[in-house]
Image 1 (cartoon, rainbow, N blue to C red):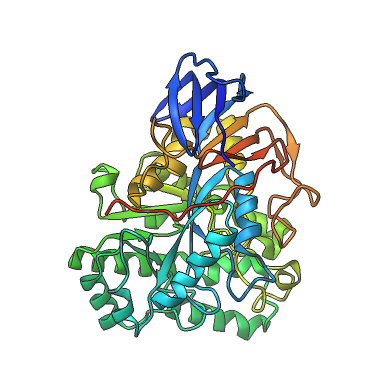
Image 2: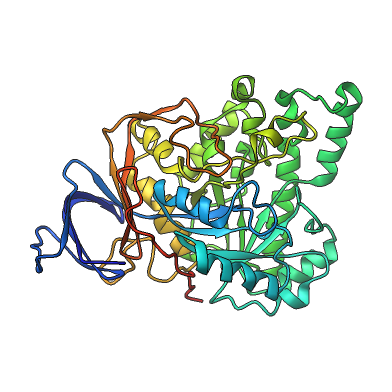
Length: 447
């Protein structure tokens, strides 16, 4: 249940400013933001956030929570709970589950499941295929985050590789199109070359050579060319190369952009040098690439060619990940550790707190036109996170909350810790415990 909560003495990070403020939560809303607020009732819960930062909850625009059909890896309940512990209060989940969310009926079944079990607020992408345009055109843009197209690296029948179909989708849908861009032909040719040499036991170091810069750039540039030709609204997921960043612009405000980009935590943190230690635990599609690529991604993020930071949280069991290269699936769990990883980079002087909030909360809300979330504003939904910047801890098996039980950050020491997370005014997470069961709400969109 939500109650009246007063957060005192917090350093509020919001809309490019850090100010010491008090914030009052009444029901599911932010009721007041002021220099000093006094408790109006005896039963108001007071949280002294002196020395801590108060941020709007992170909105993660790309996760795979594996439900339905792959629940041995993860569920909406387990992963949304881990997300809340990590300061993520809203997420957008992808359609490549089993069955895939490529009909309205299957999409709504996922919404129904999330309404029952999700700790965080949620929306789901509708999945495009080579033959479901009629279903795509039935989707209500005010109630669904958007359309996901796999232009590479698809599962099942979700690879959209017919140029005529693609152009028709881009021309006819008014949904925001999010795309995974890697050229399948290039990847297949590279993979066959290495299989000839190594069989299935290809060394993991060749992953970014197989899923190459060329494969990424070829696909991204084609998608952008098609978006410009048709006027479609395109959002390119998980950029992984420096070369791709030059396809995007910072000349317009985000709300006026028709073509936008996302970068994920793992591409900002790891490089190909980390395969030696981490192995398939950092096998993602697109691949983690070179230091030059990582540096280029950071440059584009900070100069606003890249608009949002996400996780692409995609858990697998350790047993699955420990297979030989060709059988080890790509993806890893990240929602619990994304925000603290960014805060570690704040400590190192790589990114400011204001920019973290912009890229993880404000910009996803603007980009997807999400109603009443993503900012600390009076009248907005109370999705808030308190972080202590001086509370060191180390990721280990005992504090990992993902169903899969492992993290690519295992053994990493972080200086900051999430101490409190509020979802729709409910204090769902407090000092390593979950005192109240939050119920996530279906995100709505101002479209």
